[in-house]
Image (tube, rainbow, N blue to C red; front, side, top):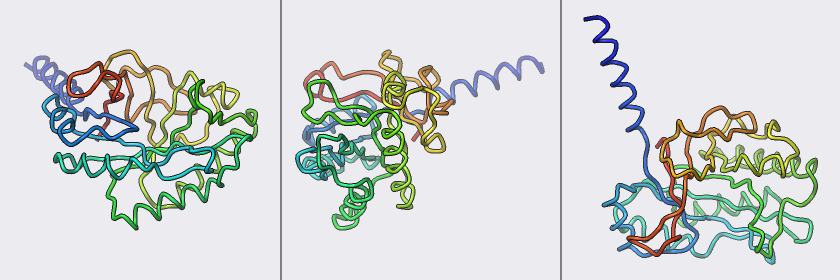
Length: 235
């Protein structure tokens, strides 16, 4: 009887853990209120639009698409909304300082009365075909700059986390073991098609568990293939 109870409790805990994730979509371009209504039927109940973009010719800026995406998402009934911050970096660009970029985000949220649950600092290099080739200072200066961004976001008093790819960490910072912000939640990138948090294995930077996981890209349905990245979050 005791063994049976133990097994049932263990199974209950496992089931609880499996259910304790929120399916989420992140995006950089508006998709329309009807799309957000549609994805809710597939149990995607959280959205993470890009809030700030590198915009290297401008030194960084609030993403002009964010407010449209935010309003469409809320109009569909979704209120669990985060935002991600892709900063301007790179010695070829006249980027605003980390503090200036973070200040722009805080001012925008207050001025537009935007309510987001958490903000995410995106620490990854731009795609190879991007004109904004950031994080190209060398590992020591990359670490110093990332640390400056982390100091600035922590000072805001808002809820923040770090979005990062373990496979890119060593390239940017010289080693997977470099710890820049392990006291903040990790949104891990691991495209294996598995929508669970316990499946994350590509840790770095002092993290040993993930708060969120990006596991792939949408393949169609409510919106064209590739319109969203697929994620699971703790909340």
